[in-house]
Image (cartoon, rainbow, N blue to C red; front, side, top):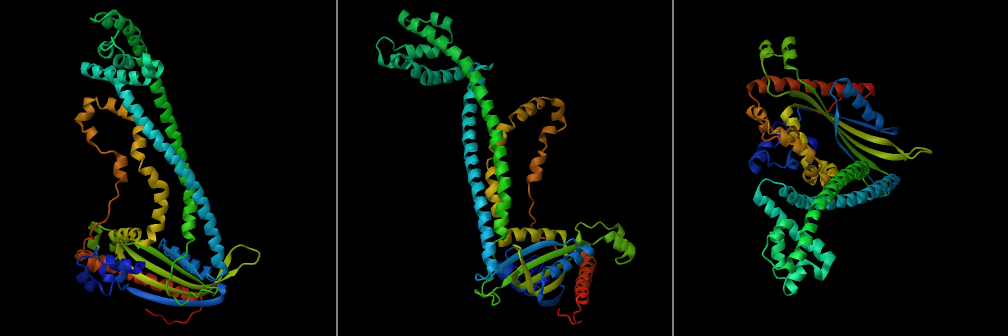
Length: 482
């Protein structure tokens, strides 16, 4: 069962739940409370019902949406769910559209997987090239031990990949291990560096005559293979850039189809009696949250708050919030000669007032992400973006290699080190760190008795005004239910 927005608010601020104390005793901490068990209790609620099978439901929604904008509430849509009866034409129509979106998305995801495999193979190749190139870098080092180790490593590669492949039984290894009289050939090759070194060896002339051309071949191979390997490395890096760009492009193309397919999925309304299988029925759920910030300094200047509050520094912003819930039960009617439907039926609308601070609003967003309401969007992001993000460190390592070399040169500057330049964290790292809101601090005396109280009064007044204007605009009777 998915928790409603009112239940989530009641969990975050137990003052907006009827059974908050009981749940706190049951679960121990506020964070562990299940939002589904909360009995919501807004500051005030106004309900109205608009039932007209001949008029469409869209004007009801847009009238209230525009009205909230006129009041400066800047409404945000939190919930948008629907379900149509399986026997209706609307169910069949949307099912076909969802299938098309799914097929297109799946097709692009197939291309994403192919490019992703290519990126993985390139990264593995670049790692191998990097290991090989390290030996070539070490051979030019000033450290004699590094030079000796690098030459021995390259000689082993040359013996296995060049000499043995080209000469077979005439290779150094084959002759040293399989032919009499050449047992010292392999050790001699590994020991000498050039022709002068061969001449100084105390070996028989047969071994020296074979060793002279082989050591020369090896030295030429070292120079040529280093150049070729560096060229191949740069080509692979360039290819990696193009493949990463392709992967991002395919991911961008896939998102709209996957998002549209998820949005066309129907919600399971369970045993709701309004949804009969063979009836032509549609159910809609919509929730809008509008909020206005409480300007403490301006309110203190106008006299709504004590004048001393003009000098007061408020650590948290407070908002007057109006939560509007729509529940539509409609009869889909296809518009003549067009591919869309019009919906006439019954609309139940509730206006709920709350006073919330910015910590509580951020916590609401977190809870929505954790709940099933955010699962679909997270799935879309996981399919397209996270697959690339998992490889981002590896990709950045190779693509930003030139930047790292430049930064290494800068690190030699002692003046930058003195001012702590190299101790600073990268700005990108700071931006990527997402701070989660922990336990929300309770209101202090000023927040509780003045600021939140005033925000609640203004929210209640605004909710009533929206409710009253809609009633009068549609000629409804003056009764309310709250």
